[in-house]
Amino acid sequence: MSDRVPPHSREAEQQVLAAMFRLPNCRDDLFTKVRPDDMYLDPHQLIWRAANDMHNRGQPVELVSVAERLKADGTLPNVTARYLAELWDDHGVGAAWEHYAEIVRDCSTRRRMIHTCTEAIRDAFDGSAPSGELVGELERGVFALGEAGFADGELVSLSEAVREALFEMDDRIAGRGVRPVSSGFESLDNIIGGFRRGELIIVAARPSVGKSAIALNFALYALSQVPTLFFSQEMSKTELANRALAFQADVPLHVISGTKTPTPEDVRKLVKAADVRAAHELWIDDRP
Image (cartoon, rainbow, N blue to C red; front, side, top):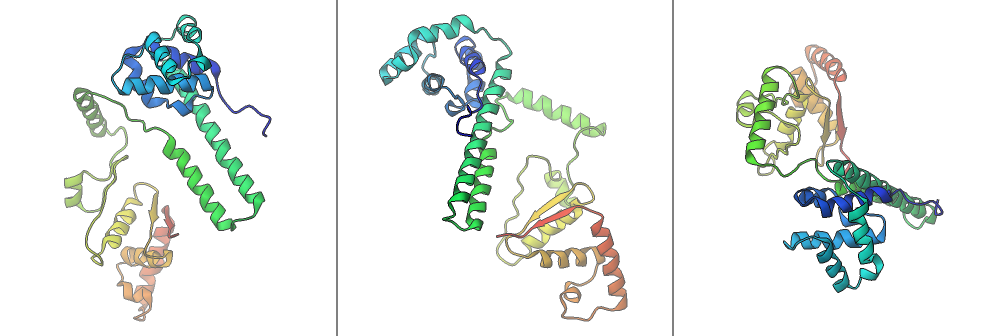
């Protein structure tokens, strides 16, 4: 695999660089979407890093100023002023810069994937670390790939955000779009508007007052609306299953946990509750 050229697109990188010089109004978006390391070719990395730093400092980003910056950094011989001029002369882009930026980012992500997997294969063959540790390292590496990506957000004015909010409200009234997930508590839904995509809801309180219990209730109520994944750092999957059955069957928890013998009616309720829960998708991860 070492003799294969990593994914990249010279043409796409050149088009993005040209857009950076030619379209000053798009520079904020360009520098947000594309990082210096996303460029594969060294000259392109040098140009992008210098221009990005100048832009962040409020300095003009033009052919001459960037060339002077590269000269001051001692990297101009690796780029040459002539190459900068060619970027301007030979690559004219308009609205298509977003398309080329996506190509550059996609290639960059693929290179990071290759690097992460290659390191995992090397470490697995090496055999110096326990397999559990290697799996953990691989998981962290794969997670970092997602973290290295950029959010779908963008810089918008308040008027644009308000307009989008009104469109979303109109869609909800008309029954279109994604509806919020109810918490199961009407008074809470009236305050927070339910659970909506992209939001982070934190339940905070002192120890042993039922934070995990109410979070599980949220998840159980959400089952009738969306598939649900529940992460637990405290209770095991068996404890969570007991609580879920008690909630669904309306049976005291101590009946399920074994401190009290269940009555035939309790057993009937629990069997029925188990059938109901099996029909919904609740996934539990109780790994530390």
